[in-house]
Image 1 (spheres, rainbow, N blue to C red):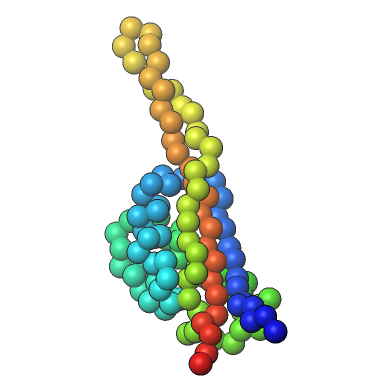
Image 2 (cartoon, helix red, strand yellow):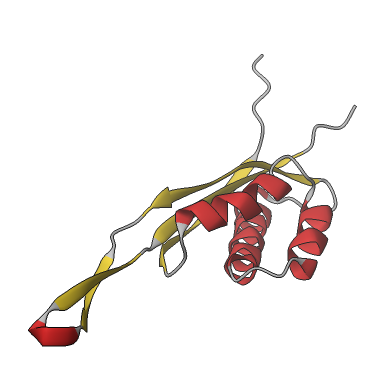
Length: 119
């Protein structure tokens, strides 16, 4: 008999955040339990934290609704990563009729939450 872990997944796409800065935040919560990760994110001073909290809550809700998990206390963040999204291309006018290109990054954040195995 194969013991399969129950997992919930959520993703946020086309978020106006840099994937490099988002990965720094995600590295802090990967492998932590749900409650601890929420507390860490609430007190971090980064813009990405608000979006990541929403995605973590969504993944936990998906797990609870789809797999009949009763409490959030025994959930653990199994995977959390950010991929590069398309860049918004804008132009800033400069002196003597020139244009300066501005590339505004976007990213996709994916979070997978699993239920901890009870011994």
